[in-house]
Picture 1 (cartoon, rainbow, N blue to C red):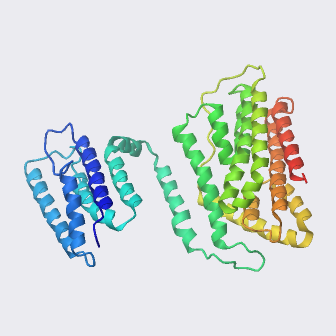
Picture 2: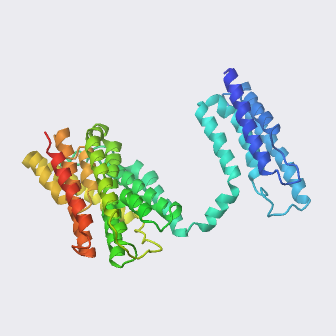
Picture 3: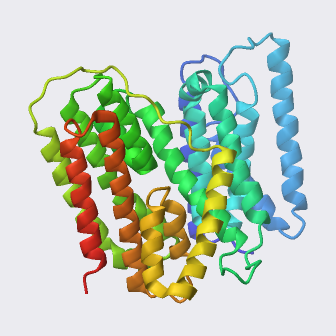
Length: 419
């Protein structure tokens, strides 16, 4: 293995950058520590040179690593003998780990693509400089959110790789891996909008709640906003506008989840979904133009955390059931049967139906028929949301929102059957 000039430049540049961040971290401390803008480049070059001497078994590199460990041990032994305070910044493993990273930058830059070495160094710098903010986050983050993160890792890192990626029944071409991948995609999008709403966006604010709620679940957002409007916590025009805005965002959400599994279908749907989205924005703006006084609530209710294993299992069950139903209906009744099925599933969660179509759950169905079925399902779901708004706000009180949702539904049906 030869040392190319660009690799040497990468080693020196990244290690110097890391050394600057290290010294900035300890700039307020009077004590000197091993590491910095001179030590780290020397360590990185030493690691690269020792690795080049014997790259097969890396014996010289491992010997250098042992010498580095002895050197750091001597430093820490002397430091703690002097009685270094335990609460001092970096009093744990930051110094030896930083020196170890600098030493590893050499062989990483030689053996891996450049983006790996850059990501390695930048990640180390960001973690080094984010000490205070990360500690504050750890103190503020509830224990249940940490458990939720663990559930997400179970969904993606344990269950998904174990599932077979081939059909297990002749009744459907959908594989268990595809089913769970759909669960992961929908859960990720819903959980991301939930986390942004909870920790980044202020809990008050109809606009943020409507936008993020539309990406999470426009049906659930409609129910939450309608209940808030019934209690008089917010001015009714804002509530009605938020309900329509959440539905407008639903069309963007559909485009994203379809694109993950079937890019040609997403591209074909794009003009229709974009047109309905823009119409929804216009209708939401019109609802908010109404002059009506009302309460100014301090906080909107949060929807439940979407990343629950029970919810994931229910979604997987619905996905499989709708996929089997789609295959049977498509075989027995053709695209007309799929259209009727789309109108029925609209009164439930339409994501399983949409993703089933995107992954070929209705075998033999053409691209145009799948477009129409998705638009019909979304239109049917809009009728359901209009009914929710009317139930909680009353027919007259919800008229602007229900009329807008019905208009979006009619527009979707017209687009579905355009030649």
